[in-house]
Length: 293
Ligand SMILES: Nc1ncnc2c1ncn2[C@@H]1O[C@H](COP(=O)(O)OP(=O)(O)OP(=O)(O)O)[C@@H](O)[C@H]1O
Image (cartoon, rainbow, N blue to C red; front, side):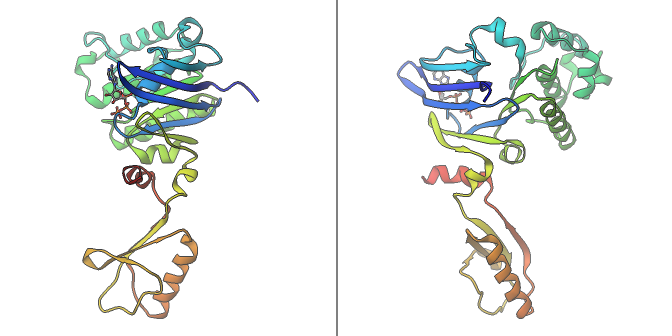
């Protein structure tokens, strides 16, 4: 098997007496989409900054493309990093900023192509200071896209973007993946991680609370069926919790079977189930469960 793109082995990070990352180990393989998620202060940024070469580990090892991320000349041109704030000079135009990205990244590309991908072609000669928040975010995305790097870090990439821009960003990311890029995402928009990530590392207080595919993370919690009933209604065929406004919730590890039982019962009794919803656990629920663990 080929060398993983990222190897983190028993990483520890301390800020003075505070132990922010504790014995963390994980790997990201070539072409994989890995989401590093977690509660506030879990240690995601500290971990990513170490992988990106901005921070030195207190102990443990981090390898990127088999090399130390501190070896910037070897590693840096192969990674594109979209930070939460890129800090472009407000006096530069969009096109000048993209050219600067290219120089710093040391990757070959055409700035006009990159402007097209981030949908800023019409703003090429606009100064950065005059861009809207969403346009600035799309310019940040250009740092990750320029020269289609092998490894791409996306830190809260869709914050402040409208739906169209979000869809466009994910389409661009999927295209980069098709061309073989490895993606590492951090986000608090869990549905985006659920939709796009192959594997998720879920951090809490410096370590992994869970790590695995989306279905491995969500299968530990029951699926949910919810509906409202007109009153009066015959007795339900399954145990359900009654919430306010005539709403019922069934938690189940046998979603298909229980849904069938419920629908057959409704059919037999000519009962109409209002606002019927049924689905697997969402990542949000896995997160909420951390607090209850
Ligand atoms: N330079 C620093 N000095 C001292 N403590 C720090 C420093 N940077 C981070 N920390 C602490 O380390 C812990 C982990 O921080 P980190 O920014 O890595 O978390 P995070 O998972 O990215 O959080 P969030 O989701 O809130 O951005 C936090 O408790 C934070 O207060």
